Length: 423
Ligand SMILES: *Cc1c(COP(=O)(O)O)cnc(C)c1O
Image (tube, rainbow, N blue to C red; front, side, top):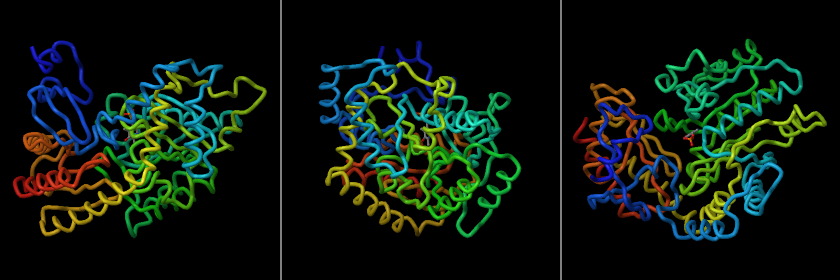
């Protein structure tokens, strides 16, 4: 039996209806932007394996960092103990994050980073004896799949089965250019609900199909929130570490968030690690002689030294001239590609920011998130050796930064072919 057949015996995949889904492709090797399956087929990983991998598969520098740490100190509990990789990663992050970020809390994945951010906000007010229970979030948001993160997420079928069990979230629309609707909605929610927090994917909603919005609009919303003491939480799990062309999407903002959530590219797509950072003021809301005011949250693998050591190396790769040049190169090439496909009337809402490029493909077919049209597109891309996961009729690319011009050309050509074929 091959991997595909053995997989089917016991494995349960994420976001997968096993009765109807195509069988998973058995991947045996990855290098740079390329993956190979068990039959020897080659694929370009044009979505960086669910947005985690900026510096290429099987990256030597990250592997060396992992090996060095694994043979020095692979793990130690973080309750009552600390270690060099965590200390150094904390120092490094504080030096590159917006200046108001002062405290670093470790966990394992994007959902837990968000979960912790929301708990920090809720308990901050609880510790002060203020009754603030509501969270403001955007329509179409995605913040993860654990309960708190899921509550903040607005893609209905992800959360439908659990909607009676979620914390109180009030939604506002994503800002649109020239419209004040989001700001007005924000003011109304604040007047009515005394919210504790406002959580948002900074500048790009990833899972709802790379919906990009303006920094000025987000700045205004953060400003409104802050003037009513609502804690602002930037979910930069997808946007962090270069994706938007700057190190963090929050770098485009004048008003900086109080709390930030990071994961995905943090370890260069090697092993799970996540971070929630906070301002001194948030931290001080827990700092007390009263033990009950502490943040009673932790995970067994909190601040895993190997993850921290890899993350440090990953940030150093991001900061290299070579990687910064890659970010510019890809952003420029994306712009050129958008100009190239502008002539097709079927291409709607073409958009790009940093290494992210997306457009909606006009169709009269079913455009459900995991609908038939999406499956047709997905299968077409796979048959061409390009891994892309359209969201309904939205096609996006989010390549690793090390993708070559030649590989990028192939991705663009396949996209153009899809436009002509499926319009
Ligand atoms: C992927 C993602 C999450 C969840 O991260 P996991 O590691 O999958 O739990 C949260 N927020 C955003 C913006 C994401 O893109």
